[in-house]
Structures are given as C-alpha cells and as structure tokens.
Length: 268
Image (cartoon, rainbow, N blue to C red):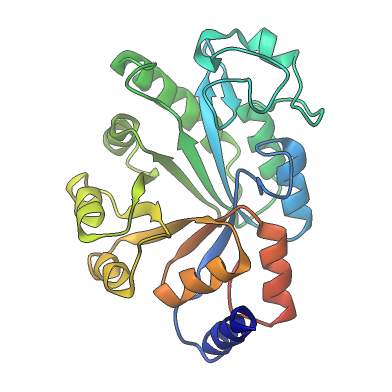
C-alpha cells in the first residue's frame, strides 16, 4: 500500500510539473527485457517507440568493432575468451545464449540510420590493461568514423567512457563530438568537478546516492546529467524528481508504457 501511494504521489508531482522531464534511454537496448546489445533488442525498443539508447563497443584482436558490454564472451554468448584477444571471424561464428548473432558496430549504425532524432550513447570500453595509448588512438578514430558515417538527421550521438583517455582524444581531435564521462560513483560535487576539470559538460553517475542538491550543482555548472541504472518504474520517478536530464533504464518498454498510461511529460 505504501509503495502504491508513493507511486501515485510521484505521478502527481510529475503531472503537476514538479521535477524534470528526463529523457528515457534503453540501457544496452533494454537489458532486462531483451537479449542485451543485440540488433533484436534495439529493434524491439525502436518498434516500441524508444528513441534513446546506450550501447558498448570493443576492439577485436584484428581491430574490428563489436557491440558487447563485457570484455569476455562467456556470459552472454556460446563463445569463450577475451574480445580484445579474439579474431572477428570467431565472433561472427558464435551466437548469444538466446540464439542471436553478435552485432558489430556497422550493423547497429545501419539499423539506426533511418530513424531521425535519436539520442545514442556509444560507450567506449577501453581499459588501461587492454589498450595502449596507441590503441586508444586507433580505436577512437575507428569508432568515430563508423558512428558518424550514418548519423541520422537531428540526432545526438554521445561518445562516453569510464576511461578518460578516449574522452580526451575525442575532445582534442574531434571537437564536434559530444563527450560524456561515466562514473560508478553518485552525482556529487566531486564527480561534477572532475567532469568539468576534463573540459566536459556531460556526466553519467549512479542514481543511487544522488540528491537534489548535487543535481542542482551539476546544472548550475552547465553539466548535462545522466543517472543510471534504472531498474524499476519508481526509479523513473526518482530521476525526474531529482531533476536528471537522462535516465538510462534496463526496462525501457515497461517505462514507456507507464509514461503513456499516465500521460506523463517524459520523453523517450
């Protein structure tokens, strides 16, 4: 009963215009609803009306760009091994555990190219362990070329990472690129100030631990804020009431249905 009351109260606040109208984006295409980071997941979310997405990009051993979150193939596919140490021909021959092909970056940009007005976060999965500075340079150039080749009209494409090296490379060499720092910490003065120190104005921080004060601090500093991960409808309400600009959710179709059913002023 208490949970229902809270949801009703949150809905009233949103309907009344209290809080923000965050953009809803599908985390890995909707990882809790579909086979994550597959063309089937992104297509299903697109068909449901979603126009905001987050995905992940790795280099293979022969420097092809593959869409997958983990740096190992084992959890989500019938393959084994580290992506960065695996040839693309091997990855093209395996399937996800739900029977889908593993997409490459060209496959996903081809899917998106006919949908105007998208918002997509392209997470660059480089790490200090697996990527030398030279590899980061080559990776960034490859990612930028493929992503921007078929960018739809009126779309916002954002290059994001936990690793500051690709962010700085993009910032210096592709000034037209939108760039976002990702942190596993909450939105705070510390994380906002780090973002600003890097010369960036986009930050993805955890929903857990955020407050109205820290979100306001980010906005006062001109920082666009993505809170993640959204795992429930109530997380959508929380992100809106905190004033987030974006919520990265695992359940985009469920959230979109809730937004439609309750006529909430939240974009997806």
